[in-house]
Image (tube, rainbow over all chains, first blue to last red; front, side, top):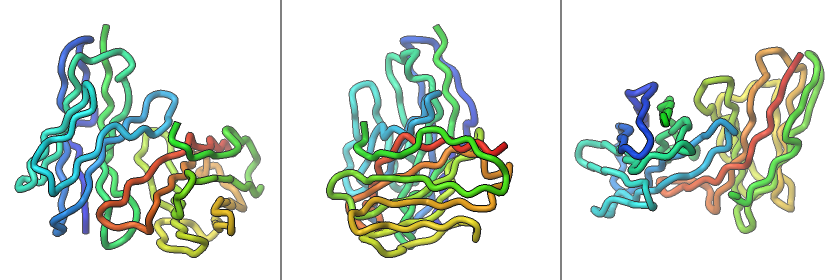
Length: 114
Length: 115
């Protein structure tokens, strides 16, 4: 079965600093997508970034980037120049090819402190 | 804005009642997914429809049912409501039926409160 593990239930970071959220997953697939979703206090689920497993280059979206290590099945999210608006729950997610839904990690609650 | 719409935004009802949540997918998306998120919990997959047909089923209670209509909008029906059904219900949509490249876009959610 596909699993996604986020080992950091809560993290905090000072404004303007950099923080890394970790995620590991388990799969027997070779090609797939991986996602990070953000859920701010409004509770909207917002797609932050997507990584394609067949690409060696790490995905980047403005201040958000990933460190994707396929062999280690690790997919961490780095947030640079943290802003107060980054305060949210962050979920790592992985499509479950044998079924259709996304498999979500339990989330990391990030607090950005002024 | 993901392009996925959900109505209503908030719903307050009593135990034993029945409610219907509505979702319209992004233009061009054929799949609709329903998720339940209780307070401070992760997302629990309920059910998926693809082009009008049930595609996958998760931990959906027998008191809950869903359908997808010819115009691709979907409705989630919750009946004999219990206090524990209070949660945020998300709808998501995707172009395809699923697989390893399944990217889902989420609606804003419907917050259900059962009193």
